[in-house]
Image (cartoon, rainbow, N blue to C red; front, side, top):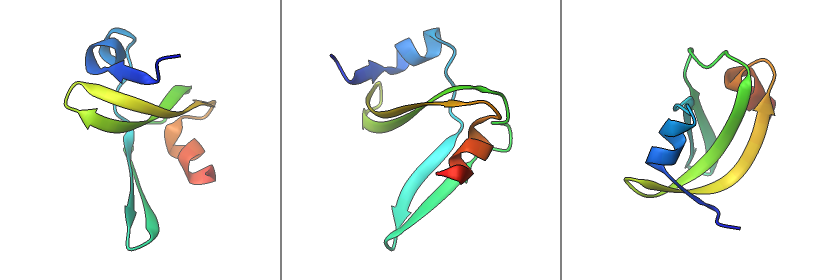
Length: 72
Protein backbone atom coordinates (compact mmCIF):
# COMPACT_ATOMS: atom_id res chain seq x y z
CA UNK A 1 0.00 0.00 0.00
CA UNK A 2 1.28 3.45 -0.91
CA UNK A 3 1.11 5.66 2.18
CA UNK A 4 1.89 8.85 0.25
CA UNK A 5 -0.75 11.13 -1.20
CA UNK A 6 -0.45 14.14 -3.49
CA UNK A 7 -1.90 17.57 -2.95
CA UNK A 8 -3.87 17.15 -6.19
CA UNK A 9 -5.44 13.90 -4.96
CA UNK A 10 -6.45 15.51 -1.67
CA UNK A 11 -8.04 18.43 -3.50
CA UNK A 12 -9.84 16.15 -5.98
CA UNK A 13 -11.37 14.27 -3.02
CA UNK A 14 -12.50 17.58 -1.42
CA UNK A 15 -10.12 17.39 1.54
CA UNK A 16 -9.21 20.75 3.05
CA UNK A 17 -6.90 21.79 5.83
CA UNK A 18 -8.61 21.76 9.23
CA UNK A 19 -5.59 22.60 11.37
CA UNK A 20 -2.06 21.77 12.39
CA UNK A 21 -0.55 19.54 15.04
CA UNK A 22 3.03 20.21 16.12
CA UNK A 23 5.39 19.40 18.94
CA UNK A 24 6.64 22.47 20.83
CA UNK A 25 8.96 22.03 23.84
CA UNK A 26 7.84 18.40 24.22
CA UNK A 27 4.19 19.52 24.30
CA UNK A 28 1.64 18.82 21.59
CA UNK A 29 0.34 22.05 20.10
CA UNK A 30 -3.05 21.63 18.46
CA UNK A 31 -4.21 24.47 16.24
CA UNK A 32 -7.58 23.53 14.73
CA UNK A 33 -9.57 25.94 12.59
CA UNK A 34 -12.89 27.16 13.98
CA UNK A 35 -14.36 26.25 10.61
CA UNK A 36 -13.68 22.53 11.06
CA UNK A 37 -17.02 21.62 12.65
CA UNK A 38 -18.39 19.60 9.73
CA UNK A 39 -18.49 15.82 10.18
CA UNK A 40 -16.29 13.73 7.95
CA UNK A 41 -13.07 11.81 7.48
CA UNK A 42 -9.77 13.37 8.51
CA UNK A 43 -6.14 12.57 7.83
CA UNK A 44 -3.01 13.26 9.85
CA UNK A 45 -0.36 14.05 7.26
CA UNK A 46 3.36 14.73 7.35
CA UNK A 47 4.61 17.09 4.65
CA UNK A 48 7.21 15.40 2.42
CA UNK A 49 7.39 18.31 -0.05
CA UNK A 50 4.94 20.92 -1.37
CA UNK A 51 2.85 18.44 -3.33
CA UNK A 52 3.26 15.16 -1.43
CA UNK A 53 2.27 14.02 2.03
CA UNK A 54 2.81 10.90 4.13
CA UNK A 55 -0.39 9.57 5.69
CA UNK A 56 0.05 8.82 9.41
CA UNK A 57 -3.54 8.38 10.53
CA UNK A 58 -7.05 8.22 9.10
CA UNK A 59 -10.05 8.91 11.32
CA UNK A 60 -13.74 9.75 11.31
CA UNK A 61 -15.16 12.78 13.10
CA UNK A 62 -18.93 12.67 13.61
CA UNK A 63 -18.95 16.11 15.22
CA UNK A 64 -16.13 17.55 13.12
CA UNK A 65 -12.34 17.56 13.46
CA UNK A 66 -12.27 20.38 16.02
CA UNK A 67 -14.15 18.33 18.64
CA UNK A 68 -12.50 15.04 17.63
CA UNK A 69 -8.96 16.46 17.88
CA UNK A 70 -9.63 17.67 21.41
CA UNK A 71 -10.53 14.06 22.30
CA UNK A 72 -7.11 12.75 21.21
